[in-house]
Amino acid sequence: MKTGLTFSFLLFTVGAFAQNNAAKTQVSNKAEALKSQIIAWRRDFHEHPELGNHEVRTSGIIAKHLQSLGIQVQTGIATTGVVGILKGGKPGPVVALRADMDGLPVIERTPVPFASKVKTTYNGQEVGVMHACGHDSHMAILMGVAQVLSSMKSELHGTVKFIFQPAEEGVEPGQTGGAEEMVKEGILESPKVDVIFGLHINSQTEVGKITYRPGGTMAGVNDMQIIVKGKSAHGAYPWSSVDPIVISAEIINNLQAIVSRNVNLTENPAVVTVGAIKGGNRTNIIPESVEMLGTLRSFTAADEKLLEERVRQIATKTAEAQGATAEVKIPYSTHYPVTFNDPKLTQKMLPSLQHTAGAENVLLKPPVTGAEDFSFYQEKVPGLFFFLGGMPKGQDPLKAPSHHTPDFYIDESGFTLGVKALCNLTLDYMNSNAK
Image 1 (cartoon, rainbow, N blue to C red):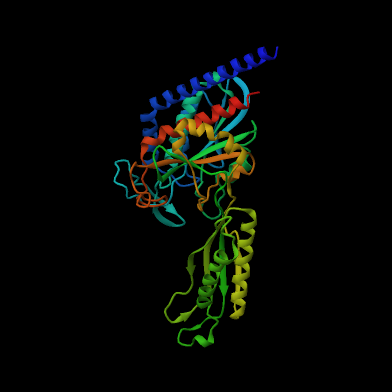
Image 2: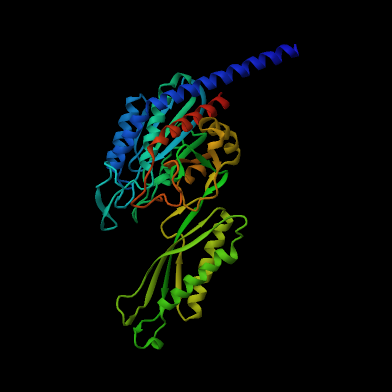
């Protein structure tokens, strides 16, 4: 009896493995067949970028495509967001897949025929608009995933929720948007999402490779505003002033001690950056006040609290020591939690990524001090966020143009790997959690 049960279990396991491999072969073939279409979608999005909360043309194209596949579509979520729901032929979990849609206020300089020439107004200034972070490729890849998985609908053990999100890069002051707003509007409910996967193209990782990290992957971020108030005076008589410019310089220097002396860098990195300082309007007038803007980045809740407390203490006490005052606002306008890859989920899904790209092409990545609002989804459900190579083979990563720059460039040949990875993660998770 025991032998019979063991043999039956073995037959079931071998059969399930063969079925899974057959599905992955099907995914691979379908993704390769879509390669030129995915590139065409990406180039169209790249040539016609839109800033956060303004992705009207973009979301219209996405919604039309999803509808053509027979996917249930919801539009207008968090202003311009699109969500597609694909119900599989068999019961199982709900897997969410996310792509971001917005461009950046950057004037493009890349010598490609589909370069953006779009201009718009941002914060009261005329700016160029460019997909300088790869969101155009994320959308094209997820549109390809939707096409592949919808063609396999009857084989799916569960439901797929395709999330096309606006405003990942943030919004203008006074607006709301992005993942935080989508979560507030309930996109992780009805049906309730069990797990979420997302990817980000990387211009300094070689095409064909995938990088990942369990736990804290991308930094949590708070922006900050410090206003130093002193006493104005004629520039010729500085002794009559309480000079907020000199005091601000002291504060900036003193803030550098937070990372070098307060954060345990053997455990987690951290960043304290002052990115803007504004004060005064003439050579011979000491101003009354100075405004500083900056960013704080960390990988744990404890370090986030430490950075905030030390910035407040250093700014206020340094100003007080010089007879001035300092007002500190943290966050000033933006807060993203740590992009945290659930360790158990990451370990469970790692074989799926390795099978898709080859184990030698799936590499552990150090923490990234950039931030991602994918973290708002991961606060609610387990998530895995990984990076897809987009740098031409053989190029020096140190010389490859970085994200958010006018020369940002992506090798399109790696897009099908992104399609295969998201499809296989979905199928493997569904099959291992089938009801």
